[in-house]
Length: 315
Image (cartoon, rainbow, N blue to C red; front, side):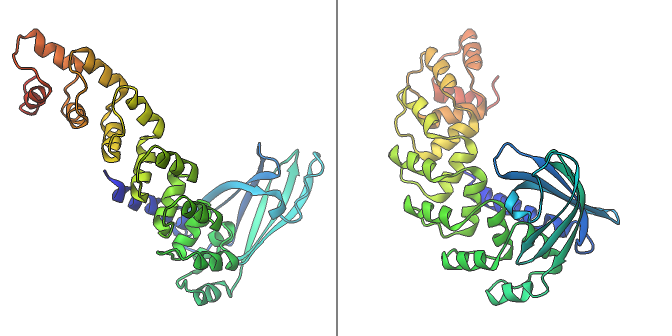
């Protein structure tokens, strides 16, 4: 199982997203363009910000609570000028432009908080640069949020993990729910990976209710590879009860599906062992290969012998 690699990849993705604005530009972003669009979620709008200068730039877009865009007037559908502000601890974004029928465009200015880096450093997170301030403002890495995460006793927190928490919505409520279902919920990297891959408290409860003892890395691997309780149940119907979680993941990685097992059994191989099924898929012992070997009159076509023939290149 590649769970450790998976965690590293998840963390890498979070850091890329967290630094996307600052890393692509030679100078800190202070201005750019905004566009506004409607969403299907009541009380929310989609706000996109972009800036291009000297061959560099950034684009970011996500749904915002309308209440976060102070002064935005959406009360009329007719075209009208608007000014709004997004006031955050890291700085203030001011947008000016027009809106018509809930959609609009214009220009924005960002005024950073010159004291933000020093205050965040005093909370135990040094190294915040001018490049960080706009993304920290966009994702609302507030002083209150930083204090809350420190109080949650999460290990591995850094300035980059803080913004990854905001991007992927790792908050105190989520951490508490993870702990209520019996997991430590103390590793920042794994908490981000949970959010990225959809390891929810309900998913954890379902896996545990199926009789499995789980750890955080296994849960992430289960989600990544689709080794869900529903998949385990489809195997249970075929007589494979409570398969080891590592083997369940291997089934998904290598394509040991209920359909594959059924075809193998229809050829007379009753209830192959999980390790045999995995080896069959790894080495290409397909039902078609089995039928071909039989047509040649080869003796001793046990599963282990078929795997051996494939390993030695006998096609």
